[in-house]
Image (cartoon, rainbow, N blue to C red):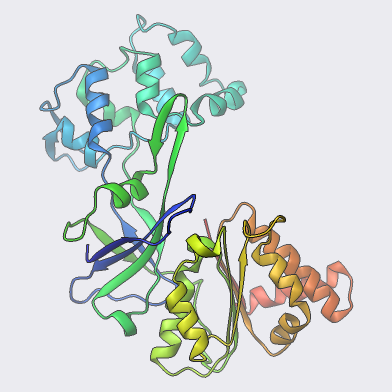
Length: 367
């Protein structure tokens, strides 16, 4: 861990961190790729699970690769004790002794007709909730490998160009904290990075290629980038790369967050790129800075005629960030801009966008 700094300032409702990780020789990436980070479960949560199961932690178990380790290490580094899943509930109900209180109710959640009830039960719960509400289901430490899924890496969009930062990789992480079922929780990997990964510490990482999110092969091609919040990450990489290699294509960035004073991520970098001309156009939307909320899609509408002219000139269009709302809203607005620009029906706008997607001129990295 080379750098781990808080980016959001006083007054922000979020904790967003800039992360720089060292690479070993030979590790290479391209703007648009992701870095995989292998987190560990929070030690306090591991201790809570051990206490509830009435195990000491020094019991020996075999991991997924048949390597013998302690139960404490398994719960900390191998098993997903966080977000509860229906499969974990089902597996637990199958191996639990009949003496477990409420077992029949738990078993009923495994029935196909009760899927919605099962989803309602697991929402906001973790493994500790299950074993607290239905204690006594685990009688042997090894059974945990039957009940719990494997702890998996988390993927983060890379926020740097290797042409710029050499043997390092940058990313940006929003640390997730929340409360559910009367317990304070945190995101698995974001919590690890926010709380337990100081500069100088080490953690396993790998690089993941994403060939579906790439700068245009023709370096003169203009690009339009929509990256609110941590979705700014790959576009910082794009801009660094184009600057480092002297690419002539124009660059237009839309960035949004809650407040300009506290949430303007990479402000110095982006304003410097705008000043020196790497960023041709730079539009921001800070949703909480006025009485009515303003988002990146609103800025797109305000610039609809110019944005359509860029599309007609062959611009590539990129979206990174929230898949549930933002990306859908951006595509809806883009279709309106196309329909207005071409003075055509919605179906024709859909065909225009479909042709952009087929030509890889419309690419998304959403999560």
